[in-house]
Image (cartoon, rainbow, N blue to C red; front, side, top):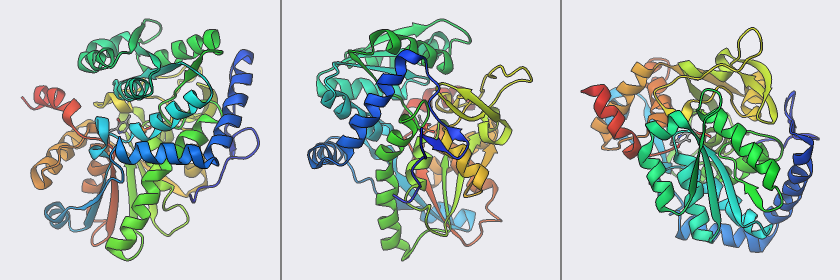
Length: 384
Ligand SMILES: *Cc1c(COP(=O)(O)O)cnc(C)c1O
């Protein structure tokens, strides 16, 4: 772990904090204490370590890309989170929070989901740990992602449709938080990214640090040091912070890549949403704007507070790419390396591909946060 911990109240500089209804303050405090104790408890560490290796399939490899590297004129390395059980990095977080919920005596996992990936991951953890699961999903997303809705039900979860507002992810989060207020004694709110009120951004980061810790060692073995550049796609920011955490104390450049239609860091201004202060896309009246991107998993108008802090301090920079560039990158990796990426990490590859001249001859570690199976139907329509 090479990133600094937040200050009092969960502040990363001016960002973060805990802006929740009064009824949720004790729940956040209880969670912070439970997490802090669990993390230093060898019993918890052993339980989590065993699940990560024997259930999720960690460690994930780092793969060289000889053909694509040659084509781009740089040395591309992929951290293969796509090879995890359920197909992305999200499993790292839900196994950690699921074990924590059980330790806290909770019997029900609550979650929100956009594209359905975090919902499926949470439903998976609930099935594994013998807990009830309720997932909130916007009505629009329920229609767009019927396969993931079916998966969640197959895994034994209840899917509740959020019909307020724009009926997408931010509304699902609002309704999940409302449920949490009403059921705080029995339910555990399993947040899907490094956002929300303290301690979630710190806790989710901690559960995703395994990506960076593994990658640092793997790069040491492959490169004899750290890569010149470490890049990842940014929705809420959990896969990016996970891999950044392994390199923040090094000379590696850290680059987060957002969709042009959801560039919270690039186009946002500081505001409070879903429990913390961060960069946020909003109109002149402070209304939260809709994010729009080809990838439902990055369709979020905000970003985790620590990314706002890393951007403000200059330790990481944030770039954006267009949907067209993403579609090209999706095909490029499939064709050259036989790896069909999820649309989210295709954003990071789109940036690498566009910047190939500036990156010429350099080593680039890209967090391949998920596999593309979930996106092939959509791509089939786009490419038809
Ligand atoms: C959910 C998801 C993301 C975006 O979430 P972050 O918290 O920003 O990591 C990125 N990649 C994949 C494969 C996802 O499923």
